[in-house]
Structures are given as C-alpha cells and as structure tokens.
Length: 128
Length: 402
Image: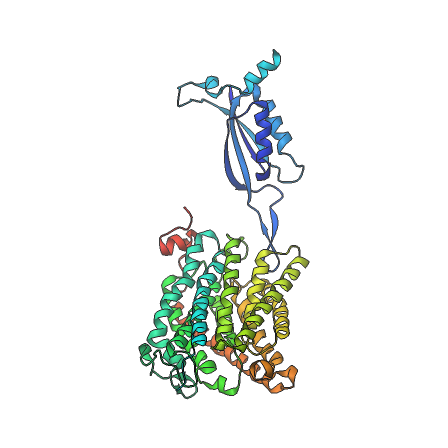
C-alpha cells in the first residue's frame, strides 16, 4: 500500500526537515512554494505610515510518496524538525495512492518508490 | 548681449541629464508600490511623459511658459517649435537659450509623471494620455509662466527656487482632485494592496535623491555659490527627513525601509522651493518638519478611506506647501538675496502664503473640471475585468515577470 504525504511547513524549516528526512533515508521528494493562511489570520507588516495586515503567507509544501509501513517514521521526522511551537507551523496531510509508475523502468507500486540507500534498506541494516 | 560661460553651461547640461533621470527613477519609486500585475503600466505612466511632454515642450509648451509675457498670465507664441531658441544666450544669462529650454523641459516632464501615483492600477491609458497633454498645457505651462516666466507670481516676489509651487503643489493637489474623481481601486480598502517590490521603491528613491541635485542646484542656472548652497541644502533636508520618518515609524513598531525612502523624498520635496534661499540649518529644520507633516497626512488620507493610491498629495502636495511657507520663514538675504520672517521680513511669509493658496485653488479646480469632462467624454477607468486582470495585460498586452 502506498501513501502520499503532503506537508505544509514554514519556509525557514525546509532545510531542517530535509535533513531529518535524509537521516532516516527519505531522499525523494518534491517541493512547491505556496501561499496560504490558517486560523491565526496572518501577520502585521510595517507600511509607509502605520502597519497593515497580510493574511496569505508564503509556505513550503513537501510531497513524498512512500510505502505505508514507513509512514509513522516519516511523519514523526517532519513533526520533530518542522515544529517551533508557534502558530503557523503548518499541517501534514496523508492520502492513499492508487499507483506509482517509474517512467525510466516501467516499475510499478512499491518497486517504483524504492532506491538504494532508502528507508527500507536503512531499516534492514539496523536489524542486522 | 552677455557671453556664454563654459562652467555655467556645463553644469546646466549636466543638471538637465540628472533631472531627466528622475522620471524613470520616479517610475521605479512608484512601480515598487503597486501589485505585480500593474508594474509595467505604472512604470509607463511616468516613462511615457518623456515622450509626450518631450514633444509638447518643443512644439508649444516652452513658448506658453517662457514666451514673451501676455498679461502676466501666459507666454506668447514667439518660440513655437523652438524657433528663435538657439545656442546664443538670453539677455542677462550666461548659458545658451537652448540649454535653459532643455533644463526646463525636464521639469515639465516629471510634474505630470508625479500625479500618476494617484490613479495607478485602474486608469484608462488613452484617457490618461489626453489628460496629461491637456494638464501640461492648461495647468503646468501657465503656472510655470506665473512663477518663472515673467508672470504675476514672480513679479509679486514669491520665492520658488526649483518648483515647490510649480512642480510639487501642482502635482500633489492635482493628484487629490484626480483621485476624488476616479474613485478607489476595486477592493480598496478591504483587500490588501501590498507593495510588490520595495527594493524598486528604494532604488527609485535613491536615484531621485541624486537627480535632485540637478533639480535644485541646477536651478541656480549657474555654477556658483548659490548652486552650492542649493546642493548642500537639498542633501541636508533629505537626510533630516529620512531620519525623522524612521523615528516616527519606529515609534509605531518598526523602522520601515519603505518609510525611510518616503521620508527622504518628502525632505527633497520640502526643500525644493527653499534650496537657494536658506542656510543649511534652515534646510535641516525644513526637512525635519516635513516628515511629520507628510507622515500624518498619509494617516489622515487613510482614515478618510480615500484611495489617493501612492500618496502624491500627502508627500508632494503637503510637503510642497510646507516648503513654500517655510521659504518665507527661513529665507536669508546672505544666501539668496531675500529675508524671511525669522530674519525680520514678515511680508515675505504673506507673499508665500498667497502664492500657495492661489496655486492650490488653481490646480485643484482646473484639474477637477478637466478630469470630470474627460470622464464624461472618454471614461477615466478601465472596465472591471480589465482592472482585475491587471493593466499590464489588459492595457499593454504584456506581463512583467514570466
């Protein structure tokens, strides 16, 4: 079973999250610059004379496709590395994925998301 | 007939180049403050003035401003098409007549460009072109004649060294009239209208500051001691206003860079009429007091929910008014030949006040009527979908960033 993680995080936390994921063997991802708002409704910026409210703030969305037995480790890594404790830390969404096809080889499903040095290889090494 | 002085001529030609640079500088100053769908449109509102007024000035603008005086009100048509404007100097001048006419052209170009901050992001380009041509002809040219071309305001003894009334009050109060007539941008004031590129605005302000040395020190029309006073006063007023604006903004939260850049421009505006008449300490006071005047004028404008979008009235109209009045306070005989109130000549303050009041009334009324007529005949603003898409695409068929 494959899953997709869609994590909305702070722009300035991208490097921390990337490093934390690399440590557990999650290398493949893509990243989108997005704008959005949450409950707290934005921040105040200084203007020419007085200040004004901006509610659509820049965020980073990380997309990762992975096997569901790796889901918890990955979510925990993002939680740990992406958290500041203040409003605006973001959200993690998890979706089921019907199919993955690697264009170069034609591999499908679990095979298509595996690569040397990935999270499964690291886990099996730990067991040895 | 006097002889041409090479030093004077070189300085005026250089100043002409410096002042012309201020129009694209202004384009970036304004362009940074609009949303990114309107940056090309906003740049062009200023840029095209170099085309439009560059032609108008040679054809008939110069002669209306500086032709032989008719009734103290307007110049005659003797210099139509620059005929008779040659490399020889005018009586009592040490620079070629052409150099003077070219220097003045750059002032005529930037003044209507200043107004454009009032109606960015919604103005219909074709109407804007007609407006600018007519405004230059029936507002700027007569006013310029009254003050500098041999008209009644100069004859009355009103002091305007480099354009406090002619340029800044004229642009500022015309901007107010235009903003009242065209109405707010769609979504104002609820939708955020965030400046999309503050670095452009800071760049523009920096280039304006440099260009202003030509604007003010060039207005001495010679490379002499008065030009040196004007240059030092210009720098001192801008410096003081930028610092005071920074403190005002800091007290309310942060020392906003947009605010500091705005403060510098406001100081430059305020010292413009005074540059060749006051001491550097006088200029410092003029700049320092200009900052709170424009700072709170912006607050006032915001409270009234008036979408005079880039605060031309607050920054140019109000700082220009303060500068023209302050010239009547701080003028010192040793600098420019006339004393103000603080040197015992109270009458000068009265003369300054009259020139300010008449200029405000004249430009506001004529501009308001002109804009209302154009609204009825051509329409002032683009359609709603065009405004929503942005003027870069809908008016110019281009986008700034791909």
